[in-house]
Image (cartoon, rainbow, N blue to C red; front, side, top):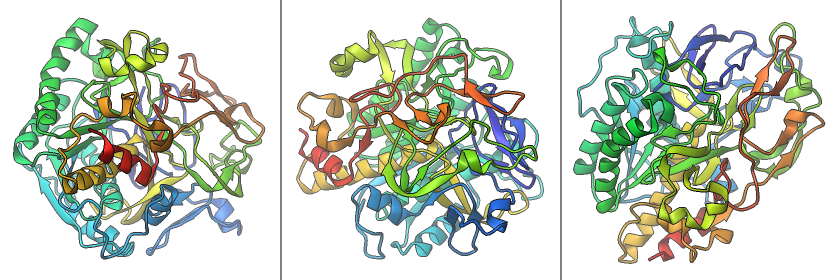
Length: 515
């Protein structure tokens, strides 16, 4: 089943993968919401390697938090990796644009946490709004516990608050002058009913409320098979897709996370905990009206060097022989973090036929809609720094390292908002549905994207990052490939990273030049 990872002191966001045990010290598996954020936080546990004097992989700003094995990125590091200038108080990227991040519950500390994030990294004062079109949930600190397996209410609120904070801070990191909107809804319940419909109702209201060219990012998903038969799913999806079509008619763009469960999916069962034997993809990222964002692992200034496929020691701590790295290097493989089960989603729809814009990749997708369309860094090891202060009785106040395709989607959406900003300056209409643009034969993909291909790290089987096949941890602690096949990462378009990673200014310029 998909799980949230929890430390002894706080619930950590995320969807791990089917069958993957995570026996790290201080971690315990708990049931996660099936309509859920695609994000996970690096383990917040003491690390003997740091105590022993080994240089830590990550040191956060004050209040300082160190991670021995999990690398992290600041806004300037991510911006530099994508050819963007440093963040400054006078940065104007995104000015006049609106970016809407869609999450259940929102966060009671959203404004203050975003302000702290901006001031820490030297950016302009954020333009921020949190909007509750269906009413604001009120969870006092004393009742938000982050425990248990409830899919909504107090047990889920802290997890979604972390997701929301990740979304707004990292949309800001790429488009610091944009109007950042956190669109929050009260429920987050089971797959399909009623959590996803309420999220879609909120998006429908936002299409009316916000200006033409608004860019939406959705870091949640529901497996196609959770809606029953393909025919039943198609009927439900058509209702939701009407919202996307209506937004795109006025120039809005929609992005969604491809998910973090690899090719594994879930059937329509009680609380959707039955694993499907066949590869699955999720909605809304599979909608032809949505740009699906897959995941990569940005190894920026470090290179993973595993020499064993046993990721955890007998005491549950991280094994240096698995998590080891060498200094230097700059690579970006598909995100397949076998030890934590964080593996990018991707594959073929069982509901949607191949849209016209994917005719050029019919050799890959066949007669089906294939996802993702593009990719961005989603790794936990190599994740992004997020500042949180919500529900201090549940989650540690301070800096955390987050990953998952929940980190990918808001950043890709924010970069695309920069293209809309320049299109307006050039007296052009906003982009609307991005997919027909980037799949067009005239689009300069060779310069607009950095292609993601297979990479090999260290000396172990799991160091070959060439697909989104899920790995399982056996009783002996060894990780081995799981039973559900994944999809290969190949040159050109593939079903793990799409066309690849948007190449910063070259990607923006190509979108500005598009008709």
